[in-house]
Length: 431
Image (cartoon, rainbow, N blue to C red; front, side, top):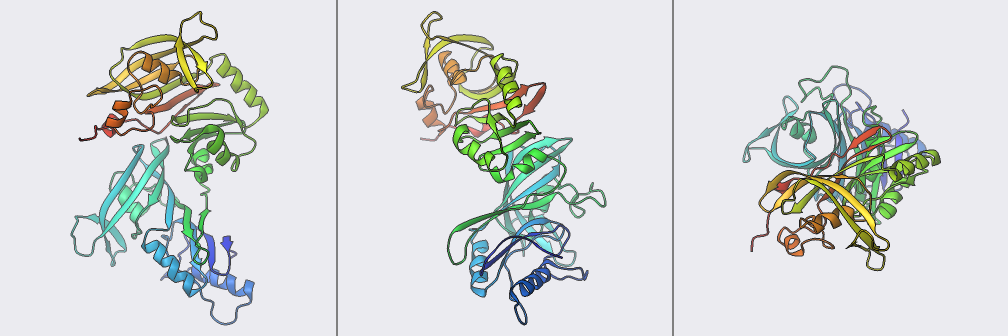
C-alpha cells in the first residue's frame, strides 16, 4: 500500500495511520504501518539494506490519525523526550454515547492487564498503576451522542477509551470498552492533531488528519480551527460556528475559517470577549438573505449571562448613542440626536450569593447592547470592565464578560451552542 504522507524531510516522516492497521507487527500477521513505511522509504530513496525508522509513540490498532516517525536516531531521541516531557501535544476527535458536559478533565490511575490487554481505572496507590490525565471539550450533540475534542496530557494504553467509558461516555464502536457497541462498527476515535518541535530546527510544527465519519460534518471539518471556534452547521450556503471567548470575529476568526472554507461572508458580529454562535454566508445570495433577516429582526437571538445582582424578569427598553472616539455606547433620552432604541427581555434562571444566571432575548442588535442595558438596570455582566462592576470583577477574578450567545434562529433553522455558563465556576477570591 502507499502511505498517506503529511510531511517528510531528512529527520521526520509524518503520516496518516489507517484505521484498523497495527503500528507494529503483531500475532495477526496483518500488514503493519512500520513495515509499510520502511518499504516506502527504501524504495523512494533507494536505501540499501535495512531502513531505520524510529517509533516514538503509538496509536491503538483500530484508531486512525496523525503519527510521526523518526528517520534518524538523533531525531528519535529528541522526539521521545518530547513525548515523555509532554512537550508534544496530541488531540483526538471522539464520538461517545451520552450527553457530555460542555467540558471536563479526567484524572485517574490506570492499570494495564498484560494477559487480557485491557486497562482499567484503579485506586491511587495500586501497584503498577500509572496516573492518566486528559481534558475534553464538547463540540456538538445529537441523537444521544456527543462529539468531543480530547486533549491527551499523558499517554497510557487505551487511556481515552477507558477514562471516558468509566464516566458513562463510552466511545461509539469501541468493542472493548463499550458494552453497547455493535459488531462491525468502526470506532469513533481519531488522532486529528499532533504538535511537535522539529528535532533539529526547534520549530513548532502542527499536523492534521481529519476523520471521514458521516456524523457531525461541520464540527469535523473545522477541527483545525479549534483554537478559535468549533463548527455547528455547514451547507452550501450557510456556516454557523461556536466562537471561543477572546477571539475577534473580523481578525482571528475569519482568518482561520477562510483557510478552511472559501468564500466566506460575515453577516453579524459578537464582541471579542463574548463567546457563542456566529453565522456566515458562503454565497452572495445567502449573504443578502441573512442580512435582510437580521435587518428586519426576523431572527431570534438568545444569550446567557452571569450578572452581579438579581434583575427583575421582564422587558427593558433604553436609548443610547454611540461614542465612536471612546468605542462605547452612552445612555441618552429617546429624542436625543442619534438615539438608538435598545430592547431586550431578561429571565433569571438561577441565583447564588450575589450572582445570577440570566437568559436574555435580544430584540434589537446594537453595539454592546446587553452589557449597556444590564448595567443600566444595576445588574452588570460579570467580567465586563467597560460597563460593569470592577470591584466584583476583581473579587471573582473574571477578566472577560460572562456572556454567551447561546441560541440563534435564522431562516427557519435553530442552532445552539454547547458552551455553558455555570454559577459554580465563580467563587470570590479569599482575602
